[in-house]
Length: 327
Image (cartoon, rainbow, N blue to C red):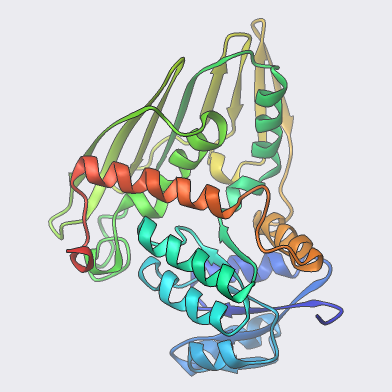
């Protein structure tokens, strides 16, 4: 591997811009290539972020010797196919969440990583957010006592978007659940593990996609109330309450810059800013494992990704949320 870890970006969309900006903040890594189905978009993105190589097809990037690891930033429905192609070419992969649209796809990607002995990680960037890492440590240390309640929501208004776009198009696995509902489910799983029972209900758009989902995850001694939606902005301060105190992840908790602790009736605020927007932390995680030669992260393992997609699948089963290509 070169002195600097060389990154390629698959799909120069909005999230790829945020990723590229944060990659520039991380020592030991550089953006060397970008691929798009539209060469003009690839050229524009590459010029903006200083990538030497640009390609008008994803396959050209997969075959390139100019990169060590690929960030897949395309819509959900292409994650599995493109991820497996990249892995079969021996490229390490950081794949945007969800890694696949269902458990079968995630299993296929993990099998390809094992077969090719190549690193693979789901880009669940919130797992590496400093405040979320700190609150998880506080929970595990017993600072909050026994956790009995968790509340986390994620929502914004998107019903004015184009119906053939990724959020409202069922053929692109649209809806709130896979795009943003994955975050509240992730937090409940991170703090409380897999629930014993799930209750859920969804509302649907005229295109057939789910646009609002409310969930209750039930544990032996705890409950998590979770929601996602595209019908309105939802307050995004997450709460984790225990027998000794509570922790609050500040507004837009999935990318929070701090947290608060309430112990014995006293509230204390803590600032814990991210490096850049926050993608830098998952990039650093990938760098560490590429240098060590290990195939998966300990903080967000293949099993973690499987558990998460299984929870998403279960919620979709309960609410009757399916996509045309799954029928």
